[in-house]
Amino acid sequence: MQIIDAAALDELLDYPALIEALRAMFREGCDMPTRHHHTVEVPGGAPGTLLIMPAWQAGGMMGVKTVTIFGGNAARGLPSVLGQYYLMDATSGEPLALIEGTVLTRWRTAAASALASDYLSRRDATRLLMVGAGSLAPHLIRAHSAVRPIREVRIWSRDINNAESLAARLKVPDVKLSPVESLQGSAGWADIISCATLSEAPLIKGEWLSAGVHLDLVGAFRADMRETDDAALARARIHVDTMAGALSEAGDILLAIEAGAISEVDILADLYALTQGESAGRNGADDITLFKSVGAALEDLAAACLVYKRHAERVQDSPSK
Image (cartoon, rainbow, N blue to C red; front, side, top):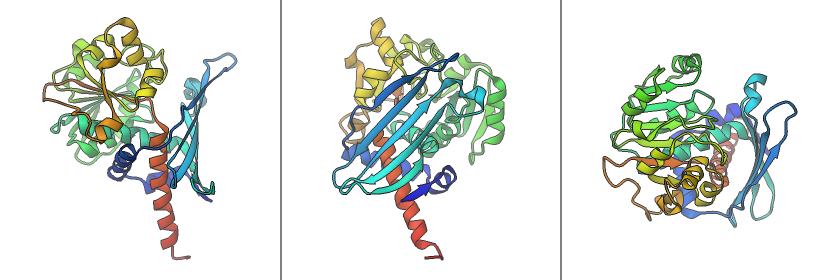
């Protein structure tokens, strides 16, 4: 069985290949049972979340990811999201690989947003606003830059020091990165707004949005969390990664439905429909589009299969063989 760590993932993966792997997996489909979602009490602190996410393709590969999400980890010097991925042969059950899941999750999450952007954002989008400066932010910036000609990125964080740090250390060819303090002004400036926060209250307001902008909502992963207000949902052509996930966990959508700002029929399509050509995605240059991601085991399986294939090829080509 292969053991593939975080450093190896960053060497084995690139966004163009990973985005296409996800596109193919969404087109083909796979078996993906409802993921287990458990609350873990933390004495004296906010509760954490344990996710168990299985998926398989008959006659192909199968895998399961375990993920923990603990918002208090920043104070412990740890990432908020930690995980492992166990890949197996779906014909025999043979163990194939144990893959570091935290970095795998970042890669596949950003790739799913870029895949959606490929259908929903304007082809000439050059300006990206990154809301949040955590571990996902550099991945989202690189992923969006892989499908659109991004030339300028503004980074906003509740702590401007975090935005300044990310802008200083992240290097993306031909892209200017700068920290900003004004979220409202940058929201109106952007062609694409990508949000990756643990916010429980709206950050992006619908009245701030310019015609043609694409909203990419990644961070709020529970039904009581949100990164946008009702007005943003009401103005947008709404798309999601999976319908089941969006209607059970996506607070941005569920809270807007509860408030009467939108209804379920306003969710136009998921990534299955987009990749199979069943939805037009963006209709015109002035459309405001919105993609809400809650994550899907299908995405992890696609990423793990690509990693396993490339790692096996590297081992096969090694001089020691």
